[in-house]
Length: 83
Ligand SMILES: [Zn+2]
Image (cartoon, rainbow, N blue to C red; front, side):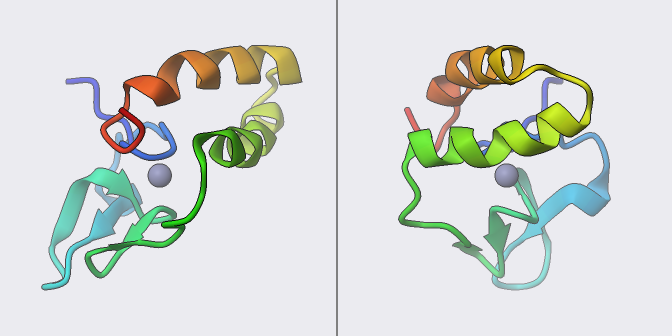
């Protein structure tokens, strides 16, 4: 299963990255950077702003800015939050 955060597209391949629901259980749709205690942590962010934020960690993983931007521009519009 292709499990990506439905806000920022971070791969959720480990439970430690999951966000949390209001009852403290894990939320498997969003990561802990985007979703905590049942609420989005960045509710006013636009998709363009999210792309800018996500480029930095992807560059740290060795991608060029163009590569990272290309992936994000292709992926984010398919996620539940931005559809
Ligand atoms: Zn996220």
